Image 1 (cartoon, rainbow, N blue to C red):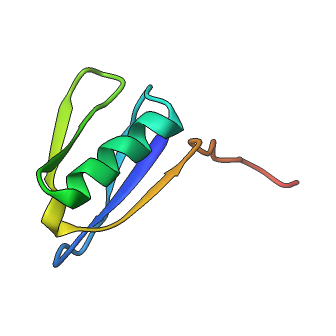
Image 2: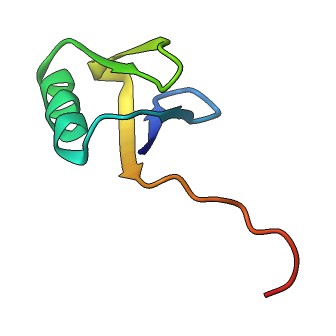
Length: 71
């Protein structure tokens, strides 16, 4: 699952590929927005921490595979 996190006053968004379910990610984001940090572990085992008060938006969805050629 792909998670895009917009951070206030940052020019680029953070993209993390995680194995967690949509519900798990939603719960973590809601907890971070109430106070604390959003902690996600990507598919390679690296941990990402984002302060909850700096989160501008979060998009959760399936990773898209780029198409090559004509359709």
